[in-house]
Length: 469
Ligand SMILES: [Zn+2]
Image (tube, rainbow, N blue to C red; front, top):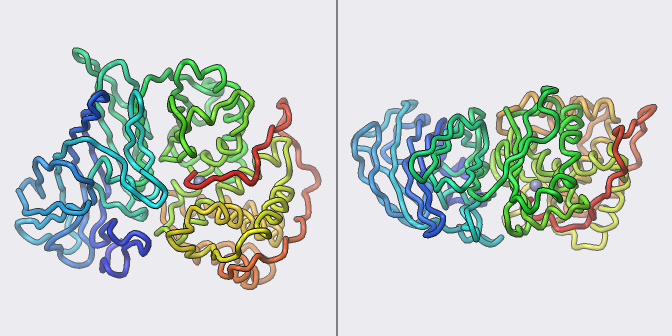
């Protein structure tokens, strides 16, 4: 929130984000031409200064040509270097003051280089895709790029009419003039910059489930030649949504969409109300179904309940991984305890130099963090028993809906549901690198009904690489 930048910026990415103010709404108007990969944009950002007056403030934006910058309608001084647009308003902004920033920019967007390869705006063979986790958002728009700074978004994209534009949120309007179409999406839920998703491509749009039955609207945007495989691979997503609503509480956003890009992606990636998959994730035999569950679960854990900074990443990935196991358990596949035992055997053969809490930037997407994170969640479930564990989980998602959390916030919360103190469990699973013994199986409720009317899960491989998913 507000405060001194030195204490509140993300320790893993000190060049990103400015904690001296917060942005609460972005209105982005973009023009994009896929052939030349040309982007021109206008951003109107509504923000509030923190506890101290602002003589200057920063937005993150990659190397674009800057056309015009305005603060409260007046031209400020600014510099644009090293991915940082530093703006000095004509008059300092008083503490707590609301202000607006307008930025015009243009150029050829390209991914931000990172230890995990290029992230952010990616030009595809025919279209584009945004996958920003963790610091790719400045590859396409100016933002206060820190996960804790959540804002509502209106995104308007003008592009040749042959393309479909997909962004997270509700499609407000689609207007065709001459050969181009403008798509306007609204995401009212507070959204972190890394979770602002976008894809432009030759997609066919389909609805999943039975929209007549109510529930969360589910849509998919898929290259026509992949539709047959897709319809088998995602057939159980509506059942997954029902299960997760039962286990985690109401779906936190107004709708959920998936995009399948017409090329391979290393891993799928979550965005707000939206997940992006590669063509390689549809195979017609549900080979990636665990990832369908993983990305959907991020809507609760990561997107709605968001980490204050990247040191707490296990609260995203451990929970999404555990949701894979819960889906398996409840859809006729291996139990969560069986998955946990397999993960435990796998981790026992690997170096034990990773702490879940504050793993360091280098290990934040290490597969061990995912496995160990899910195991830690499982250890808590074993200690609490199913009744208290799922109450704890639903309350976590509901109390912190649209909020920002830390590991200590979570451990304090979960301890309230335990009969015995959890300090030793926390210390062993979260704060020490050595792998604790496998927890004993949780007492089973009287009967765990399988999802009716579905064949057994095909099951993904639990040891699969899931970095950045
Ligand atoms: Zn993930």
